[in-house]
Length: 333
Image 1: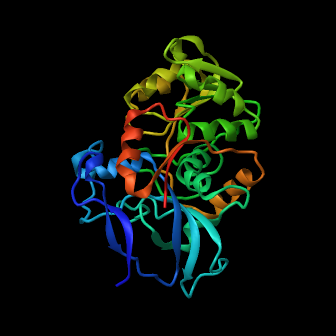
Image 2 (image 1 turned 120 degrees about the horizontal axis):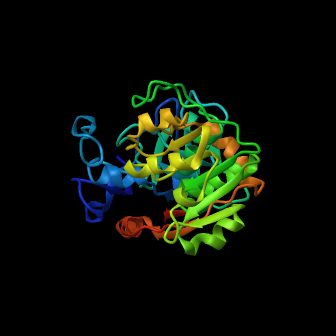
């Protein structure tokens, strides 16, 4: 059995449970690519898994056998191809959000990853592996909330399907605008012709204006719900129980899209004629290919907060816990 280096969990806990050690190179199935990983983007689901999905109700927590390799987002080079795969060749540079959401099966914090070819896209030639690895989950989340859903899996938390809304000429507020999803959502909304109001802490002001934000609100000085009105759409990348405060910023017929669970002001939303909707991001190679064209042409830029070697995944998770991230944190292999 050939070995590789990987980060594995043998128990749930803080960053200290991330162990850099030998693991078997995954076996290749007929519909899969085997990829030599060059960089790995880190995302909130990585630390949700690491701490045992404490933020979910106990009955929703998956039972995953240890040891587990966390992570979903990679960029690398194809080293082997399953016999049913078309459209990829050995030596191709590719990027992917691997098998999401399949709890604990994505296994991206490693030197090699085997995953369905349908999860992969060709890496844009004009960007390096670090920037490509930073893009998939944040980019697909922004895309599937704002542009095109890309799957027909029912969200168990709401009766209707999520429908992105037309953005051209609309006023769009992005909360958490400097983070992974936020900074890409700002750019996608601008690309689609929206007037974008970015909410983040003051140190991100210049950064967000360079990405095209039309207005900036420093939430440490002003509560956006006190100063903004008549918005068509709020994308709250933080979501959670406080997301209901944004109902006050929206016009009748507007929409609130929280990216994380916790919204509980349904009656208030109904009274104000506001649609509240969310979706679960899912792997989609063709959409990632489209997103890659925007990266290639320079229409969208992925910002890198910091990079750490794979062996120092623990430090990367500590950086994430510290907050105030500008763009994405990436592990290099």
